[in-house]
Image 1: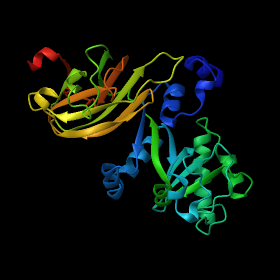
Image 2 (image 1 turned 180 degrees about the horizontal axis):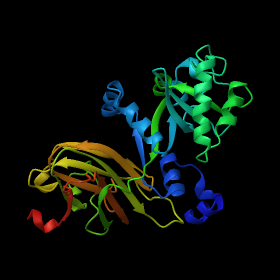
Image 3 (image 1 turned 90 degrees about the vertical axis):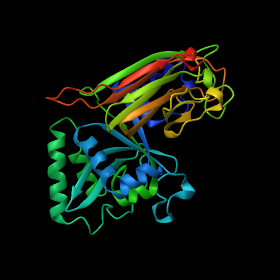
Length: 330
């Protein structure tokens, strides 16, 4: 697999670093999404228990999950055995008598975890151990051989996996990643490029932003959407600049027209990575989608995709994404 990915990127040297969502997308062929746990909207969702239900639903559907930790100096002292700025696989998400737990794997082979649900914790009654092993036995029958691994964990013979409470997880982790199957969702897709005369940067460059690709998005009713921007760069080189996208309320003008900057609704973060993802809820209305290389005069091809729910047994609403020409603003 490493050799295949090195070929995709031009050399082994180009594999120095990366992110879980991009790795998941390469391995599964499915769109991968990142959730910043420090984001205000996610924080509200965590407080309302809605984000836990989303993560549990992802796990129940068999989606691949992972997490990235906070910087080491921001992780509470009692949890410092968790490495700062490190990636962990999430093998399972479960509830035991109302306790929300995640089963994590540390690719490095971590030191012994000493959190609330460590191997020798009194929380692990004989009954809860039996329930957990029975659950993992069922998972093993689907090709996920976790039971023996967890038996070793309980016997302190396998320390690169551990259980962590949801409360501890959100104290130590900054980002959660999910490789999501959206095969039963509708989608709309734009294939376009930043090129001379159509690469004006972001709204940080109000004098030039009008030249960036902009699209009119019509949302017929409030709905959850998954957005993915993929930068189709030459595999032998790294991304030349930061890319991202912004979704604004549409007020009849293009962004940058006569200095006009409509209200920002959500932003797909700016990054030098090849793919930028966003999962959010949009209310009924019209929006402007700005797809940008952040800085002006940076060129390249891209694909921007939006997935939205398909309603079985009903006439499906249509989410429209229309390319706006610069001439439309004159």
